[in-house]
Length: 142
Image (cartoon, rainbow, N blue to C red):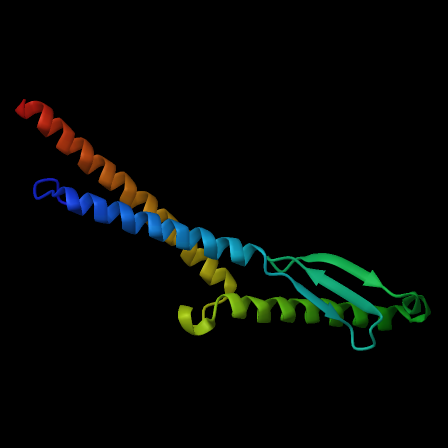
């Protein structure tokens, strides 16, 4: 925004666009934070749940797990966790279709949102600085 060629409609439009951007960003981030995944090992002995960030949130072993050899149980756990992570990735793709973000990963989308938020904050500071310049000029003209 150029303080010399300032027009009140410019400010109204910039504020409206900024508010719309913040609402869109907040909604998308809220949705991303809710995407979890659930998975089960092939035999059904182990069930896993992962949080939105892909970290293991829960693991359930059926009573049959106690009859497995350690190596078998380990493989079942890995299968269940990977199935949960795959489920989380599929659900994330439903929230953020890859085509709309150029096929970026969830982490890349999150980084992009952070960049947008930082850019928005910078633009707000610039606009506030421009308004302060206008206010000072108006006071100086009085």
